[in-house]
Image (cartoon, rainbow, N blue to C red; front, side, top):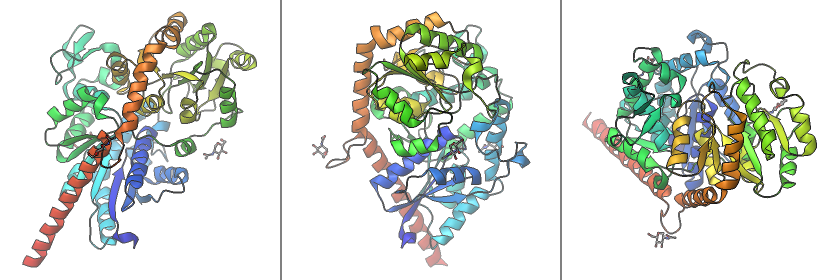
Length: 501
Ligand SMILES: *[C@@H]1O[C@H](CO)[C@@H](O)[C@H](O)[C@H]1NC(C)=O
Ligand SMILES: *[C@@H]1O[C@H](CO)[C@@H](O)[C@H](O)[C@H]1NC(C)=O
Ligand SMILES: *[C@@H]1O[C@H](CO)[C@@H](O)[C@H](O)[C@H]1NC(C)=O
C-alpha cells in the first residue's frame, strides 16, 4: 500500500541550520497532506542523528548516499559543518558537489523510482547549496525546487554579493548592492562575512558560489521559509533575477517544541526543568535571552564585555555560552575561565542570571511570558522562532547572511536593534548596556507593537479555513499543483514513447 503514495524527496545541505528548516518543511507537508511519502536524502551520519530526533508520529523515510569524509581531505566522520573549523568548511561544500559526479544522488533516486514500480518522485526539493540537483532532476524528468531555510532579503543580499562582489570596486566603506533598485540597499564593509570580504573572484569560495548558485536556473521553483507580506524586497529580487522560477514564500516553518528540543542536548548541571522553573519565578517581560546559535560564537574579549554588560544592566538573563572562537569547538569547555571571576555563581545566587552551557530549549524559553528580548546572531531559524513568539531582537550577526537579516529586521521591520557585529569587532560593555535599555525600556512599547503585527502575519500565513486563505498555504498549494502537472506531463510523454515502440 505504502508504495502507492507519491514520493517527495528532500535534500538539505549537511549542517544543523539547514537540516532543521527541511525537517520543519517535511513535518508541515505531512500535516497538510498524508498522501505523500517523504524521503530525506543525506549522508549516513546525518541521517543517523536525524532518525533519533524524529517525533514518533512522523513517517519520514530515509535515502542514504554513501560519503567518505576522509577521501575529501576532511577528518574522519565529518559530515556536518557544525563540527568543522572554519578553514575546512569550504572543503565540505566542495565535497557535497562531488555527490553529483559518482551519480550517488541520481542512483538513489533511480533506485527509489524502481521500488515505486517505475514511478518517479513527484518532486525533489533541495538546498540552496545543492544547485546541481536541479540538473539531475531535469535528466530524470522530475519537478525540482530549491528551498531556502533563510529569508528572502538575507539571501538576496548574499547572492547579489557573491555574483557581483561589488565591494571590490569601491574604496569607501559603504557601497550599494547591484540588482536592487538603485542605491536602495546599502552595506558597510563590516557587514561582510569573512569569505565574501576576502573573495577576489578567483578564489575557491568565489568559484564554488558562482557556479553553484547559478545552477538554480535549471530548477523550477524557489521556496522560502518566510512570509510574502513582510519580505517583499528580497522576494522581488529573486523574481527579477530568476524569471524562469516560481518564487514562493511558504513560511513560517518552525519545528514544534518537542522535536526541536530533542535535536539539542543540555550538558552540565542546568537542565531544561531548572531553566523553566527559573523563568516561572520571574516577572513578565523581564528576561533577556542570549544565544548565538548552535554553530556560531564570539571572541573571548567580546564574551567578557557582554558578561560585564549583563551584570551592569541589572537585567535578568539566560545566556547560552559556547566556547569563544579562540577555543577548539570540539574541546571540553566549562565557560568559567572566559567569564569574569565568579560570574556564574554570583548571578545564580542572586537569581539574576543563568549561564547555560552549549544548548538550551530555545522554543520553550521564547514562548515563556517572562522573556522580554532575544540577543541573537540572527540566524533565520532563531529569527522565525523569536518573531513567531512575539519577542523583539537584539542583533549580533556573526556569519553568512545574518548581517543582512539583522539590517532588515532593524531598518524595515522595526523589531531589532543591532548591538554587535562580527566576531572580531571591538565591543564595549557600556554600549551594550545602552542598547539593552533601548530595547527593554525606551523602545519597548513600539518594538512590541511591531513584533505583534509580524506575529499575527505569521499566524495567518498557513491558515486554511474554507480555502487557502493564508499566503503561504496558497503558495504551497500552487507549488504542489505545478509539480502534479509536471508529473502528469512526464508520465503522459513516457506512455507515448512506450506506445510508439
Ligand atoms: C559547484 O562547485 C564545485 C566546486 O567548486 C564544482 O566542482 C561544481 O562543478 C559546481 N557545481 C556546479 C553545478 O557548477
Ligand atoms: C545528551 O548528553 C548526555 C551527556 O553528554 C549524553 O549521555 C546523552 O546521550 C545525550 N543525549 C542525546 C539525546 O544526545
Ligand atoms: C477564506 O477564503 C474563503 C474562500 O475564498 C472565504 O469565503 C472566507 O471568507 C475566507 N476566510 C477568511 C477568514 O478570510
